[in-house]
Length: 291
Length: 301
Image (cartoon, rainbow over the protein chains, first blue to last red):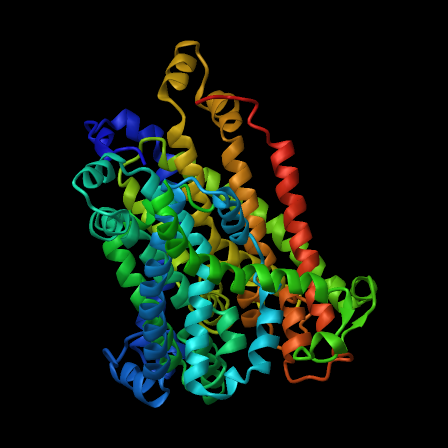
């Protein structure tokens, strides 16, 4: 990312006028984005009648849409499932991938290049290539018949599918850290394993935060794997839950409740984005990730 | 180096184990499955019947599957054109020295972090709504009543409606890739070109585009990988199972194997595996083509 410092050019009418078409196009696009999101938020605070009469918020804010969606339609349930999945999976991903990424970036061993190639290729593998054997295996072992084992399976899958991306991302990050730290630690007699946990891992914190944000968003929004492996009321994560909820709310005619549920689902990643958008955007292109 | 051996093994094992269990083993098994007739997905290997390429030829002669491939091709090509043009346009504007760059960029990328289910619902229930929809209100406001009356989600328009909504969400990601590519191009090229009297368009055509070859490659590869997995949007936009307007290979596979409640003619997990193999081969071919057609010409910048 280029530094933003260059932006401090003095205001110049002629220059800005030349850029006017650019401004116009961008403003049109983001106006549409805001209308889309803004309308849905407003609709979530209106009654269903007002939505159909196209008079949003005519009778003030209806917070009860949210409490109804949260308690009666059980958005709370799927929300908590997803929160559990994301927190546990994101933590495990760092514990598993950070040591591997560090090793790949620092040590020269036989399978190093092979593992890297494998991980990079895995990022381009369509998910359809992995679900069938996994499903067969899991069904044979009876894992889907028990809530606890099914929950563990979901964690295993969420972690597994994100291992390649997380490892490659952290690997580029570790290779940019200077080797001088380890050399100094080695001279002081610190064993390499300890050096990693106490010195290198804390130094990789910015990279760990970025990759965790991405993992959080990915797992929170994950749909296909969850649809196949976690399609029961006690395990359903938010994306799959929202889908079945929307279908039933269309029939019950509770449109304001539906929009409230949509807002609840999209709120966590949205809030994360408001505070961390610069970090997220830098992470998309900066880490040399995904190509 | 020798004393690090234990550490390397301890540090690599968990990640490699996960990779083998979730990627390597299932991929190899899927490839194997695609050559067999497997009545039940849980059947053990001894019950599989080897049928060679029968699964593939069966798919090639199934109308619904061909329709799903055709839809995927349209999504990839038409959607790709729309997304890449808009992404490139936005990237060029963003890097042209406008104000509020970070703000614009953040808002354009925003749809990428929203759950596809939530985003698709916004489009379906609001933008395309025939009663209070954004499109309906917009077209009646500017007096185009004939357009205001269009049923965007009817069978005739559904595919385009789906595609537009999908593209809206995808532009941001590809825009970021383009923008970072443009920012890496040295300003000196443009200064030299300006001195030589080249206008902005000429600079774009003869400096920016050729130097973005590698970036195009990344974008096309990523676009292909995500297109192949096209599923959620299709499921949300289809009103009936096996909706010919929105069906994609992934949806077809899901219907076949995980049964959408309707009686499909034949239960054969090998067909699902064959679809996976076909899609992977397509991705590999596109990747290979990109690498050969969009060579970097040893340009250093």
